[in-house]
Image (cartoon, rainbow, N blue to C red):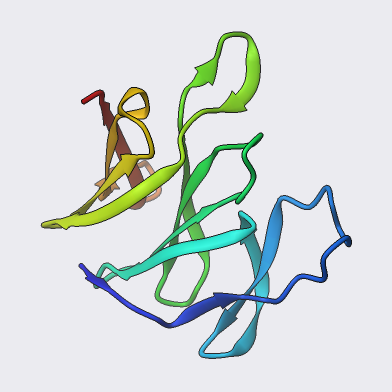
Length: 142
């Protein structure tokens, strides 16, 4: 796995689409014809089998980090929302501070000790119609 600089988000006009939760994706500066969840592209990685994009909402009231897996043809094949529910509220409480590569996985450290750390990796799952790729996430506080 390695860090890359291949993707970007289309520029958003301030004040428009205030309820939007996805942003149009650019590949090498050109429209990809798709949008992915998130309003800010935090980081991006080449896994050798596809791409991992880490996004968030860049909003103190919606602290949510999303990891999206795209295959080599840029089709979204998996997505994980990182965080835990805060009481009974549907808001997530995980905002990534640092991202490190740990072999074939990412280590995403939260912005506070209470948010802990997520380890996110790409894994194969056997299905009746053949193997599929998915994201596996585990959380550790501290």
